[in-house]
Length: 123
Image (spheres, rainbow, N blue to C red):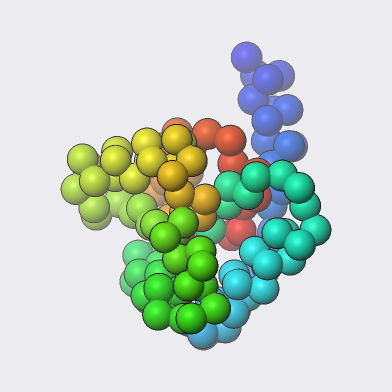
């Protein structure tokens, strides 16, 4: 079991980038996703981690209001520790069933939620 888990970790690509404003985060996410779309044939399933819920919610609002995301905005959702348990479960299931391609999440998700078939992680 340990060996399988270690192999799964190495298959997920991880990216770390320091960004200082919500608009800069939004732009980075948009550029990064567009680059992945242009350069890969794989189905994108991306989890984007945030240090806290306030940052996550502000970036989510930036994404939803930016016209550059208009063709992919419905593929985004977010999950964090203070959501109602039923809502978290619903979002997690919809991500696992590939109804969402992009999930914004706090570190809580890494500890308590099972997300399947993730191909990219942005931290």
